[in-house]
Image (cartoon, rainbow, N blue to C red):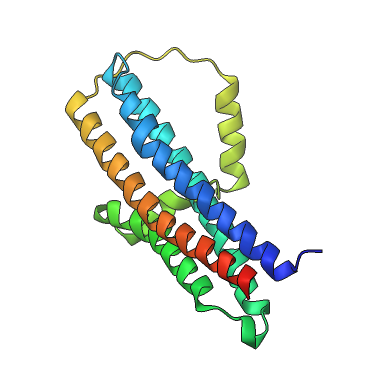
Length: 186
């Protein structure tokens, strides 16, 4: 039977691998393909949805990873408390929350926290009921005029954000793989 400490380390490392893959695929495949859309308004709407979903799932994966790794560090006996677990958490936190704030710092801390709460789904139940009612209605909207250059700048900024997030989470993943390999040898 596997040791619970090793299982939590493994889950944390797998979550970092998923986060790295999410960021890499978003920066190299998803976001560049949005520039092929025919209108800038459809590209803008698609980019907003991609940004929201990447933030939501990226922060969830980082939280799962951080909780598992800190739990493994906390319940480990003194002779098995490895500092690489703490460094993995630091790199994951910098790569998720730190990079996200850095790329959205012009809006301020309070607005950034509100946007993170909104994108990750931590809204009040009342807002969810309103959203459900809006989903039931079918509305035909007129095509908005969106500046194509501003959409391209947003795409480039999001691509850089995902690339930097991928680098930080990749470094944490590499630490985790080496650490798990070293635990196996001990």
